[in-house]
Length: 404
Image (cartoon, rainbow, N blue to C red):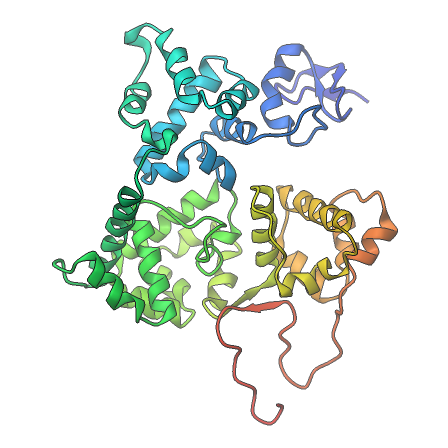
């Protein structure tokens, strides 16, 4: 059977030596496609944050990998405008000037990233350097981290002031007064304050923030999260803070989206409605699993929470090797474009987690993974609604009269 080139689609006779799965018609196509293929192959070197940045540049998207955003300045760039300029700068280096991801990684590790970026652009005639390099010369702080703690604190305070003003707060209030007043607000109201502050700063929550799940960004991939962020920006510009807060607190944000004319746009995000219908009090534990896996992939290792330990088998791990292997399987699951997290959740609480996962990814040690993915589900029929697979973000719901 013939094969087609992964890059251009022409008939291909050369297969990737690393994985024997990808085929190419010529060397140039393989080199171009490597930016994407490295994540599906068996590379001889470790995949780095520079590789993730290169893929983001290829897709013309902001990187959403936590450690990448930290190491290459996006987390410090704050505004969308600054992030666009920074992405343009890296795209110029990686896509147009031929700098390889491994070279960019070496520059960063050796502490010479800023100087080498300058060296690279200074080789280009002044008239051909574009606008991203002059922006970089005026904003090197995004990479050198030379902002003082006071400057960082001021930026945070300025961002929170946007949320404070949106909430109807007095323009004359000082940062100390704002903090003193809002600290006493109910938890859900304070979450809406922080969310509106992010949105008005043209930002949105990432997986390292607790707002990521309750506002539905957990359902997104790197492309759709920008779209959802734009819908939220439109929502708060069309709503009062009180409307936003009441809708969130009563699990009716979807109704607010529809009432403000964003219903059709929200339908582009098929899993969001279920998340928002449960927020802010609970969520399916599969979203905690996704958050745990993304943070672990970003170099932020931590122990899985109680819900996913029981639901997804981490409680069965007897060694570090078991833990790493189980995480690797779930990483492979969430890397699949067609992954449906609610279906994964359903398989979990129906006691067929292993059967579902093995149809998505190849499992070499079937007996081992069958043991690891064993959970207490399905539960026996209950005389009251089951909380299986649910994570509660606030106090547990009151018992149903007559059953507890």
